Image 1 (spheres, rainbow, N blue to C red):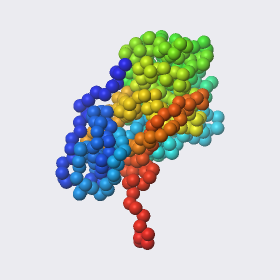
Image 2: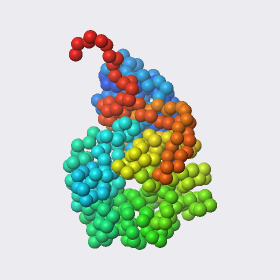
Image 3: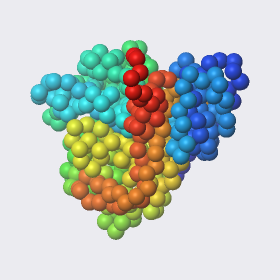
Image 4: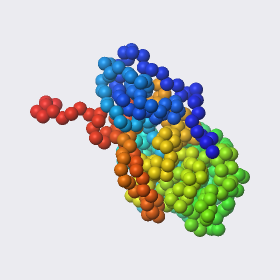
Length: 418
């Protein structure tokens, strides 16, 4: 079940900052650090110097720090990685998510939820990826990576996504291997009404490009077999998203009508299939998620599927999605694992999702609020919870980019000259 459970990779090495050898730009004092990569789960200080993590230790002297931020009583984690979003925002009125109004500008919806890295899930294909890069990726302060759609023009519309002649594995793989290997982390297959053709073309592109494939496997009527998908078409390391979608008439579910997780689903997870949440506006239902969690079928990665049709519904933002798993009984440490080190491992970007010395200083600081909260699924049904995460401070590449309550700011002093 836990193929991507915490593993101490050689990259994940934490050492103590060495005295006053270098001036610390930001020192986070007294927070409870959760860093699954480094197996840290206790109160520690975190030092940031020149945009990098320069120290993680029980007590780091503050005499050399330019800024000390008291985060006592809060949780300090690596910057959150949202592995399924749609941020190819544009003004093409005829388009859905490829340069259309349904995509969102990343910076408006990331930092306020502790997210420092997003992965666009196939909004663009090889034909329009350069436009996506120029108008979104190159302009965002958020780190934006991407799954490249197997359809050349990406998610322009449902009809266009059925065009088999526009599913070119060779051109898709070429764009990855020879043009943008640092940005494109995988292939996306989605919204196909037919058989396994689109998935197979995506997998071929993944083999040629040396990257995983993310599969959105709905909209087949009658539904195609997900057992066949998991066991015959997807490879270990490939990703099944919208894991807890209820299915309706066009998607086979992971939980059967009696509330039991289908045995082959556990077998697929053991085989190495990655299960991603991909909440979205229509792909997360309590009737699937609650019994799955109770039977220990937990997702590998937690993601939002951020777009205009999800942000104001049951999804809201990443902290809300993360809090839903707390409400279903997942420990906070396991929630953080599925939003940091697990996605970094899945997309083969192990320099992300950790607080190792020398890594880029992407850091999230959360309050864990206690009270009576309600969490909605895509049908409007509510599950109650006693805890809710709230992003207090987000640091991207060593700079504060979100400060909810001014914990990193100096107090206002009247009549002070500027």
